[in-house]
Image (cartoon, rainbow, N blue to C red):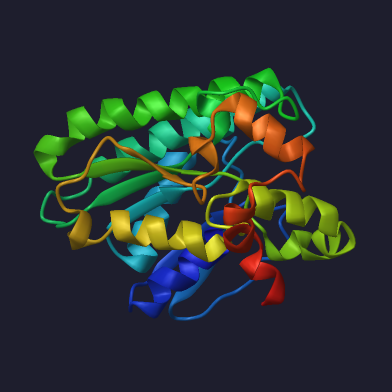
Length: 251
């Protein structure tokens, strides 16, 4: 999702800097529009200096977008605290300390349904971190609004990422289930998330702050019991709804 977002910003003429883990060997791009920096966000003490280096090389930062989560093998609570919460807080504080002559500044944090609901495949530390980030969005929206910085949150659901394409190609029943229970009749894409992020960073969203934008094709609108029935009875759909739900199968 971060990669799609970087390309969306670059296509609009912006310089983009991606900060990713040193262990990420998939991102090694260096060009005029998009530059990749390898940095361990768990190293909090040197994070302000790193941000200063990034500014000196690429200029003042206009938009700050957070996609990270802790994926290490160490203590999950410590990892989420450092990587998801403290690193985010430090970078936002450094970002807001830039010259107030930088106009149109915006921050977007990528959240998860686990911020407010329970996702059993994720540990408790992940839930707590996402809930904390949602509150961070509200706090900073209030405290940074006076200096012209907007802060919002994007909450995706299931996103069909390129790296998972092979898995879903081999498990079409799962794909059909997601298509079946999503009102828009398809799984989300990284570009869907990038579209929401770039909108929130644009002048078109100039009076939007402190909000969580849910980008899930409408799946969260289902009442729990009816969603369970949809999931367990793929063929048990009223005839008038079948065409809408299955139109995509001919694509």
